[in-house]
Amino acid sequence: MINLEKGQRIAVELPKFTIGLGWDTNQSSTGADFDLDASAFILGENGKILADEFFVFYNNLKSPEGAVEHTGDNLTGEGEGDDESIKIDLSKIDHRATEITFVVTIHKADERKQNFGQVRNAFIRIYNAANGEEILCYDLDEDFSVETAVEFGRLYKRNGQWKFEAIGTGQKAGLAEYLNKYN
Image 1 (cartoon, one colour):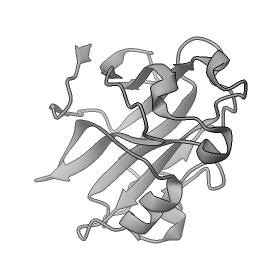
Image 2 (tube, helix red, strand yellow; image 1 turned 135 degrees about the vertical axis):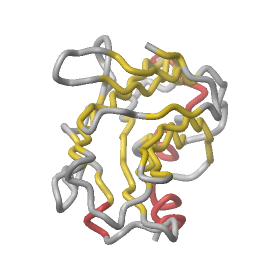
Image 3 (cartoon, rainbow, N blue to C red; image 1 turned 180 degrees about the vertical axis):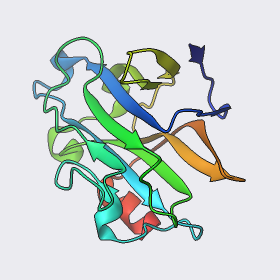
């Protein structure tokens, strides 16, 4: 298993794997549950979503060709391990796709006065769902004190090879901002 640093890239040799996203929250800070949401944007050469249905999130759990599947919304982040998972099958991916970006946002962040500064132990990992073997893990150990959304990482295709890049870039907007960026 490889622990990635921000900006580091690694080739992903498996056609089928699962992206696990996890986090813990400091609940006492706001009194409300933290509902973090994982989303995937399937992008083409131009850096834009192929079509609306290629934005996979809690209200659209599967891409049209079945290559990207969200396993469902976790409203609280309770429990150990992955809080939300996204299954990837690159053998089914639309031929126009060149990148899949993974974003985690805080649902109702403004209303609940929440940000990633109140989130601990956030990570993204890739593992082989067939045998549970972890391929890579990227721990977000930065202090995103005011950010309400973080781009965890991305899969991208170069010369026919899929690679993962650890990104870890935060911003102070929500999901709508990423939709604007990728539409």
